[in-house]
Length: 323
Image (cartoon, rainbow, N blue to C red; front, side, top):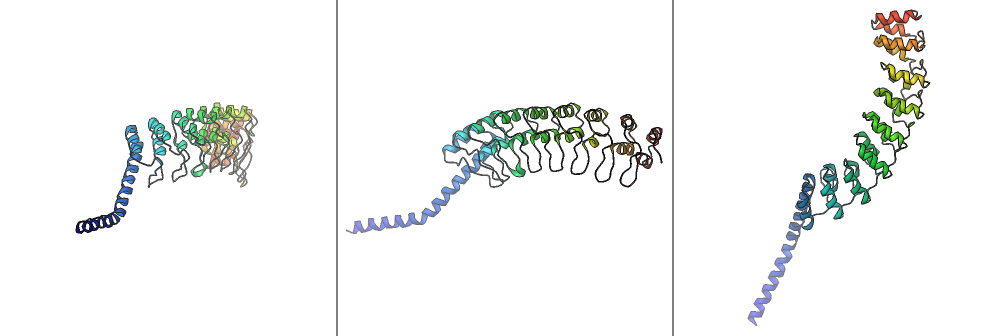
């Protein structure tokens, strides 16, 4: 009887001890998983495939998030071009629609078509938008990733989508100096008349960049050579110092005397102010009005004299400029 009582008291002590220890054990268990999750993000970052597989088997959360930026292991692996790790994570149920703190999904970060294909096969949205309404296509076009752009367009990416600054993939490609990509996007249906937040068209960006072949291609497709942006500047104004580009625009119907809506400044006036003798001569040969005035009454000759360009001033006088 005494032995049974002692045994009972022992059981009670054990139960009470376990009751006291359970919260501690639970906390310890949670900390263990947290450590596993941290290790998983690190392994994904460094592309350690075997370690990723081991951590997942031990209970790491495939969709855990980095507390600093909200990135998941899949986002991290995609950013680092870790193809094999991406494949493993997807096989274990990684969420292709998960977003980081900027609102970007994994596909936006993909620079390798093989990774993008894996993500798309698992349901990644080719038109997903993140911060500033950026899409995977616009991001790839901005970075000059030709193979990515081809893949995304083939998979149904919207070539006419605009980001928060009004840029299409076409505008982004021209703005960042990728004319061949721009030609591809035009061929695949991009809007050549789209305008960004400043009112700039693809043609304006191409003219400002001095890319003659692209300018010719856009004009051939029907781009407006007389369009104006929100600053009131016509397309022709951005051909300053580029005779071949200016000539192409004029041949397509650009108005040689088109001026800024606010002050009336023309390209001839700007050329004279810079003292670009050859470009000024070219404009005069194309019948630019030598005595046209700004809204304040200044002529091309005024600007040439103001900035001390005597040779250019003499040229203007030879073509009828008056003081």
